[in-house]
Length: 259
Image (cartoon, rainbow, N blue to C red; front, side):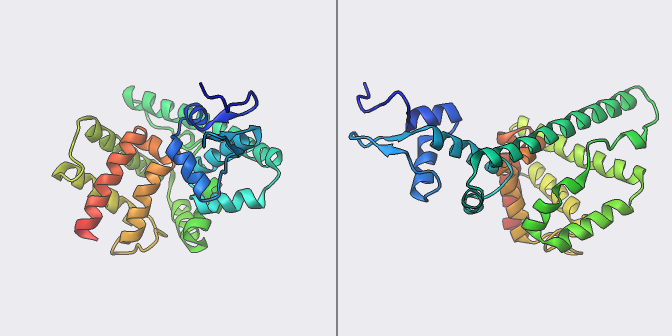
């Protein structure tokens, strides 16, 4: 029995289980000063109180947005008022919930039209696909020029061209998921052909960092592969965490061979 435990705090093992993370991760957060324990017991165990749990929740929310640990530390330092920051994040989550619901309805209508042999209604296909909501995130990661070029390219397309592009992207995602589910070797020919398609897809988007006629740079391609794993929003496009890791491994092998 843990005789150092108190009713108003939790051990590192309890927090790891409740948060779906690991004790090792929590110890790392302590080592870098991101989430120190509330106290250290006489037995050497780390314990966490309510304030530490709130901080951990904020860390996990910011990780879900794709921020790295140094950036998260800066945000927590800058926004010390936890309730205010969480209210802002909650508003964003509600917005995402609404946007995803609209996307689901839009895609369901598209599937019904395709399966029923009906004409696609281009004006209904893009509800919930407002790319401008990510403007600040794109500009912070890759610069204002990258966003401006991509935005101008997207706006220049007709509804049919946008539909074709989204269909191509969706098919690529489905092919990645299918390859992973069949246990394809990430370094094998089939997965490498998918990685080549991913490279070509990115090359076709103006504003892609290091892009142009040569395509995305090695650094950007590898960084994007890691982001697919780190950010659940991207991982969802590939069937979840395991699928995203498969894509990352295939893209990494491709970059090592070709970039």
